[in-house]
Image (cartoon, rainbow, N blue to C red):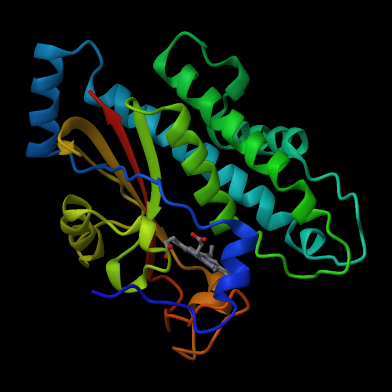
Length: 273
Ligand code: HEC
């Protein structure tokens, strides 16, 4: 299927935010405690010290931090888009502090207190370092005067963080935000075959809303504990992903014609076994 492309602004938009190769995919797991979970459990106990439950919990933690970071960008979007303010103070330190607070509200745990020698502690630190890196690298864009919309939105922030995380955690873990194929904007995050199959399950009306999917499955030839966490379009998403279908949104992409509540994306996390 050919990639959907924005009809205009693509070059400048991509230039601003850097579409780059190298994002990896990851993937997922989920939640039905069924044959897949049992299977992964038996593999885990025989060959590995980490259980599938441990991995599902780590995946959830990483997804929570990614969402916290996106929320911070979303809350600051008007300020980021302000053409008149130069030094906005939305840097790595500020975003990390706010994201950590949101993470703690969601989980009851301060991310800085997670044992740094545990896998979860190592990975969440890599992710937090990635958040700081993305913010610090984009200060010039964010603080540019005379430009309103700069293309620095939660989806772009999240993708850049996942790419930076993928470099830090190479061979250990990967995070990507993907979507059903017909909704994909960035060809780099196309679902792989396994993800496509699971997405069909997540889209089925019998799948409970918000339930994640978890299984042990190969990824790029290596065994991984893979978790997929569904995300649904809310009202605010429809300014870009809604109707009329085909109309160009502020970022230069044609709108998808989606409705509120549709499955819009999937956070896909892989932890290699
Ligand atoms: C200002 C326009 C805008 C809004 C609002 C917006 N998005 Fe997007 N979205 C984009 C753009 C642009 C991309 C491509 C980002 C990239 O990778 O550079 C994207 C990418 C995505 C992706 C990743 C898959 C892909 O197609 O590349 C998902 C999932 C997604 N958006 C879901 C949402 C959800 C859910 C919301 C609401 C919470 C939302 N978006 C709000 C513009 C928007």
